[in-house]
Length: 81
Image 1: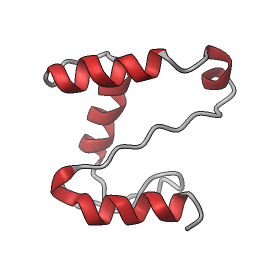
Image 2: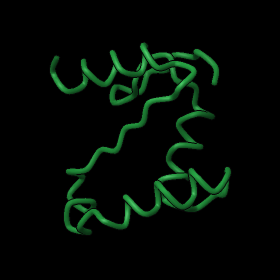
Image 3: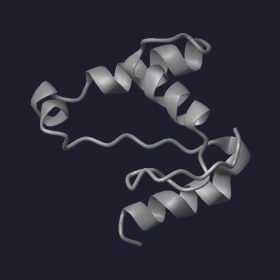
Image 4: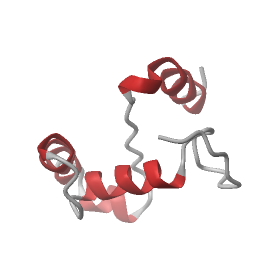
């Protein structure tokens, strides 16, 4: 989506709040943005043990096709690469 920066220390740079909200809602299965988002990400989220989620030990990342290189590089930096 847009290339807005914000002050969220855990956020990947250059990702709009709208994009983050849609991603969060798609993973949690709380909004329907199309079958791929709703069903596939919810499936993976449900496979994560609840205690890991409750302890904040889980982070799900996605790579957007339209921002492939930037997203890939951001995730690599997050992983310490």
